[in-house]
Each structure stands twice: as C-alpha cells, then as structure tokens.
Image (cartoon, rainbow, N blue to C red; front, top):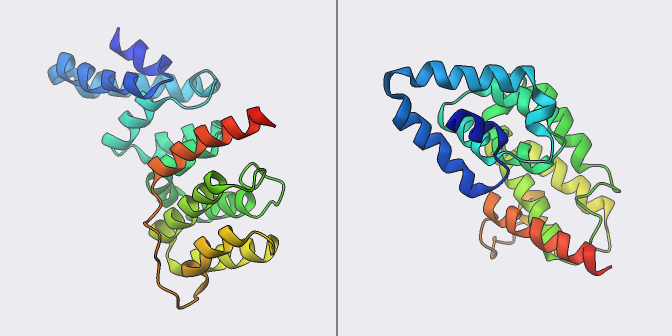
Length: 195
C-alpha cells in the first residue's frame, strides 16, 4: 500500500511514506524499493505526470539511486525536479547535464526570466549556486556572466549574480537554497495569476 502512495505522491507531506514503508518492510526493504524504482522506470510518464513527486524524490535521494534519478529527471519537464536532484544525477552523465542546464538557463524566453521579480532572481541564483556546488566555480562564472549580459537592465539579477561573475564585492545576501527556490515558485505562480 505504501509503495502505491509513494508512486502517486504529489505533495511534500506524502514523502513520509518512504520512511513508513522502510519500517514496515524490514528485511524486505530493498526488494520493495527496487519494485518501486522498476515501476517508475517502466512508467516514467505516469510518475512524472502532474509535476513533482516528493516521495519518490526522497526515495531516490535517501537511497542514492543516481541512475533512477537521472531517468526520472529526463522524463520530468519540471526544472525544480532537476534542481532538487541535480547533485545526484549530474555525475551519471556530466556533459549531458551541463548541456541541459546551459540550454535551460541561456534561453531568454524561458520560465526563469518570464517575470522580473525577486522570486525569479532567487530561482536563477539557486541554480547558479547548485551548479557551482556540482560542477565548480568556472561553470557558475560562465553562466552567470552570460545571464548578466542577456539582461542588461535587470539590476537586482546583476546584484545577486555579481559574486559568481568574479566581481570582488562580497556576498551580502544569504546563500539561496532549494527551499528558497521552492518558495519563489509559489510567488511566481501568484505573480502570474495577477497579470
């Protein structure tokens, strides 16, 4: 029963089913986990339908299932899924994931830049921060510099990306986390609804 809940989960509170299944499964945990991953791999569109599946993402992260996470991210169009699992999936095929991130971040008409507000800036900075953590400062610098050049009029974006562009001003803003980006997602949806 918990396996089904994990596969159908769409909200963060449902991620608790991973721990519950682990407790109930006992010595059969690995079999149950593998059955969930096998089903998700064979039915990737079903598990990705409707956006994020926080329970399955928790399972992938806690069990360090990089290949399964890569499959899930390839079939899920939500960039927030990739942001959440990026450090796990990037080592599976570094060049492919670098190309995907470059494509996402360097399209001026992408969802990242649709709204010029604080939430959008925090989302972009969360990506650059994650890229720096996973692939290093050089790639973060390259992307941040290109983004700043794409949007010469967006001062707040410039201010937040300066540390990644090699400008010597110290970072006065706190690090942007995935949670900040998730918060920004809600704000972006509200902004879009008001338009």
